[in-house]
Length: 107
View 1 (cartoon, helix red, strand yellow):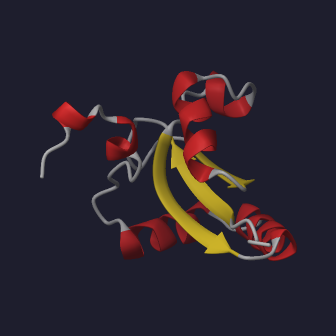
View 2 (cartoon, rainbow, N blue to C red; view 1 turned 90 degrees about the horizontal axis):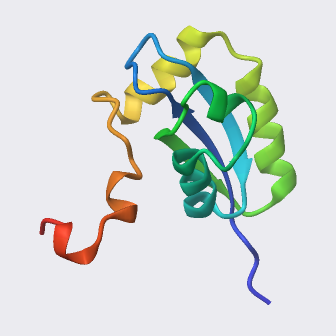
């Protein structure tokens, strides 16, 4: 039986650097990010327009993903930003091309 992968992730509002950051966990990252973009994931992220995927990590065990999520939620903003900028210095939406129609994708 194939084990589901678990993901922790940072999403932010459109305001780069000063915007709101959210740390979440999901077993289906593409689906969850789509919920953030469509504002169907009610609550904090919909209220603050938090829908840009900036960073994610993948785990095999949900317990490890939840442990990492809790750890990150305890971090100061500066530490979260440093982690994002280490791998995504331009603060690009890592999910931007996930939802493009095939004819709109550039190769």
